Length: 87
Picture 1 (tube, rainbow, N blue to C red):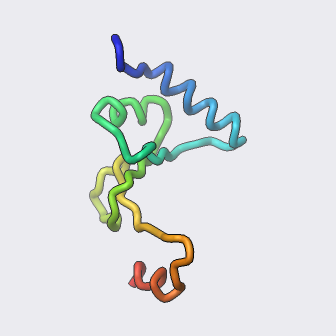
Picture 2 (cartoon, rainbow, N blue to C red; picture 1 turned 180 degrees about the horizontal axis):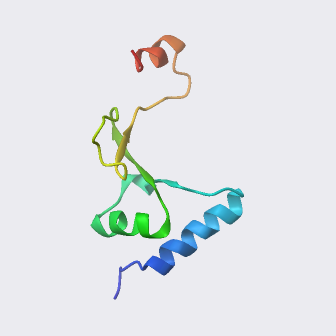
């Protein structure tokens, strides 16, 4: 079916990352923050344990570990601004 991603394709992608990086890859940052129900269903099947979105914010107990938010860190950010993200 057009547009469908299989477990096999997801596994190949993960294996290519691991081969290139030389490590066991367990986390995925969604390209451009794009994901859907199919992506989330396939992630654990191919071995991903964590997923990171481009949504800004903090992670809280009980959040879905496949769709975690991130605090944005900008190049040239003053140390005081960085520290204020983590009170």
